[in-house]
Length: 367
Length: 239
Image 1 (cartoon, rainbow over the protein chains, first blue to last red):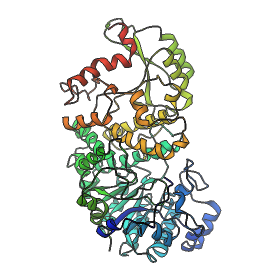
Image 2 (cartoon, rainbow over the protein chains, first blue to last red; image 1 turned 90 degrees about the vertical axis):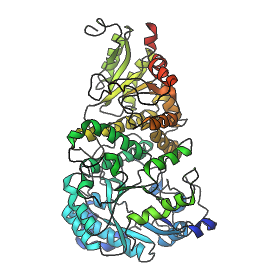
Image 3 (cartoon, chains in turn brown, blue; image 1 turned 60 degrees about the horizontal axis):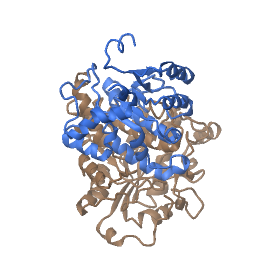
Image 4 (cartoon, rainbow over the protein chains, first blue to last red; image 1 turned 90 degrees about the horizontal axis):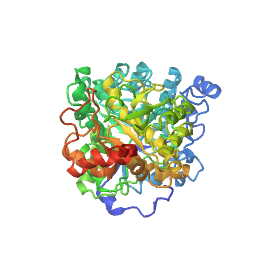
């Protein structure tokens, strides 16, 4: 995971054929960078109290993450800043060698997780301005996400209204874990605003830590916690479908990010199997649960599961549908997936084109 | 004993133990282990701590001592929300998410080194679903490869540990047809893992279609006879 990527010898033959769209790039602020975009009232507040999340006060996670900044060792920029903080270095290390034509910024800074709703709104607004000023303006291939606080739908809708017309934003980003399962009605005004502006939602694994990462409690090690993250993604998909969100908003498009995708077929089978026996509990559901997996949801591939028999992954792609998968690298994090090496089975040129390029165009607003 | 074992010799019992107190759980195992009609130790799938934690290891030590597997059955003490993102509106959602609980416990057991400490211990996952196992193993392999230095006692691929130490009952299987069932069995790549179960008398009971469709006759024989006898050695004493 820490082998340096050979950025001097990009795969030119591949580049000539295919520009890649990367749906998960993590920008990270230089120390103090966000303060520029915050009103004085919130600069002072945060300096005094820190961010009010469902966790430690000192701005760290529940687990030692095993890597500085969760990142590849070779992603530290030459200027000494944190990984993901230097646009020139992102260009040199990621966009150029892989011929990435669009990269979706997914800041994971917890602005949307604050328990203090005014603080959340101020942080989301600041992070939105920071993304476009420091990333999209100098490098238009990098497109920003509209960060919103799900716990305050009114403020979230206002923030969407404020940014929706700006071409530099390509989606609304929400955290993977929420205070209630995401399909519940308190969140519906946000879905309505997203649709009104022709946007899509990217739901990135992570989010508020209001509950234990497993119904059995808290994990002991990062190796567990990392995989448990896929469960919140699965629960949110289940919630969206069985609460009827896609019946009320049939055009809503949601990309599930950094949860992998191996679970998608099995979740569909399991929902269908038990819905068949309990459908009277959700009598208004219009279709079989698994059908919504193929019409309203897309899956960003990283971290790509690694079966012992590589062709098992092809079978998984075929069960899910080649039109549902979008490539994501997770740069600069340690579990980065290389677009040419993350899958060890053979794809046709057409399949690869869907995965690395076409499918993302069907979801995101690249303007 | 009084209501079941003495009246119907074909039935075998589980030693139900209190996970709230491993000390008392061990006492209960010692009290009943001499009776060969008790064939496993039974725990709910969600307790106060995750099941790999060393707090529970005295229970596992006692189980190994008496050649008993540990069964964990769907069910929870509800110390935590049924999903990591809160409380869903429907029983259907709770039930659908239930396999996540087993997946979390499996990660906990492997990562905490339970099977490094007790290599002969078998866990039986009861009513856990089956078709989640392939993708679970693929992701566990990947993450372990990346950060295995954190858990140096996990010396081989999680998939190998799972095949050696985990057994899974076949109801519900969670697959739509025989093609998918066949593929999932192939991907799991370990016919020793499957144990037949009916879930009688619950309403999830599959009735006439009591085994997943499309299994070969040799696998059916294994899951109905050979595998249970290997998993529950005490059954061999009387069969």
